Image (cartoon, rainbow, N blue to C red):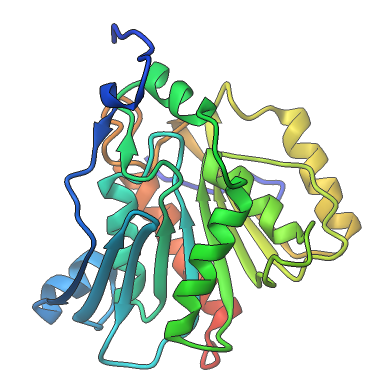
Length: 272
């Protein structure tokens, strides 16, 4: 099936504590990963085969070591938590020459099903989510001081990416490009510097036509560049490999190729 852009541009109980959620098996670490350039190219389409990875309770960072970075890309996870597919996306971005960071909004906890994800999202936090994200982005940008910033958000992470791109608070750094997977949010984008690209499913109970139209009007009103893609035969979470019932590899590959081209166009100084 061709994935053309459509025109117009478990049985579980809520736990009483954190113990019932799965925890990622990580410890704070700093690892240099050296890959076969051919395998790196196959995985991420780029030639940067030497990466440094940092994993802490605040998130995951992948840094290209054999070439200057084109900028920093924040990858905001869905309500499942910071899962391996999101970490792999960071590695793919580092292979393309970006410093990639995925803030961990659940401090190592991940959800196996919808009920767990809902419970994790409802947990009370001492620090607002947006401040957590900004702190992690600021830390990642120390790898390339003064570099440009982009965001990619999946579902719940897409909502936060759009809010951050709208710059509702002066503490939020300027975002030049925002890519959102199966999420919409109608913000006041007047103060935004960001171009926006969205990847939507054909059938999605979490994204309404009304919500999408409101977001598009807000972006157009603010004069922000807007690019929309929708993928036939897909549903919510179609780009996440660990969602076996929803994952559609052909659509996911096409969406990711478009994501990289969009980031390159807005962040890379050598973009044609």
